Length: 110
Picture (cartoon, rainbow, N blue to C red):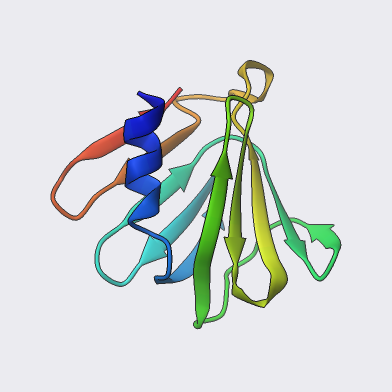
């Protein structure tokens, strides 16, 4: 399952994205239909300082991501990164993350 999850995230690299937060969900959205909904706690890092995520300006690009069994880090242009706790203790339900693909495929991290 981890390989399928990673393959889905690879499709987002290099795309212009927006970051949106609200109602306990953080969403990374592309203009061409990809949406990564994050339900676990996140930390947004900008220029070495951490703060809660806010609506992002246009022009933010997803440059890379790192994913292991406990953490996902999305690295964006301009030195911005988003860290997600995907460990068992970080789980808040209904799932840790959900990737909605333009073709209707849904990939779940739980």
